[in-house]
Length: 200
Image 1 (cartoon, helix red, strand yellow):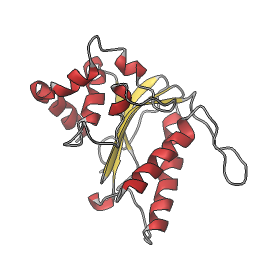
Image 2 (image 1 turned 135 degrees about the horizontal axis):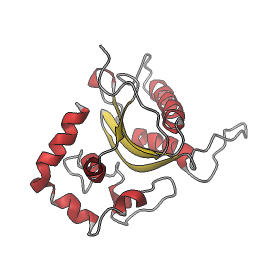
Image 3 (image 1 turned 90 degrees about the vertical axis):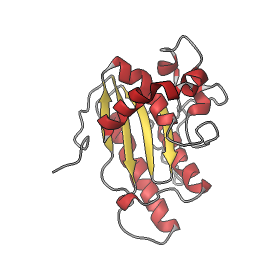
């Protein structure tokens, strides 16, 4: 029986939480370079600035088709929170990023075979309460979330800015300070547990 959230609704003008993990739950990021390479692949397709191959051929830009709202990379899995404007934007982003990263990883570590446990999973976010809290769920993945450098939290707190990470849609939902929203998570464990159960 297929795992939950493997079959996806490709709906335009929609929010999605996307996630995947390493095969057999093995680590897919072994050092800082691995994290940097994965993020550089996201930037390649999501930046407004066009990237080119060594041959001079331009990579397809998806800047107008999909917005990366939040992300967190963990040693054996990743989370992406996106808003897609066109129905196939999510697929057009995840397919080349996943293939390119798996090829890089296998080449670097002299391994063969699949890197990811399965095709990425995706949950369409349609509930307002879920929409409000999903970025916090993603950013709270690391135990030391305030020091974890492989998440988009610094873009939410104003310490980083980039055209390929676009938190404005989510920050517009808050009347207060996002860092305070993060820090009061102890009082909202039930809400976060609800999201975790949805993704299980």
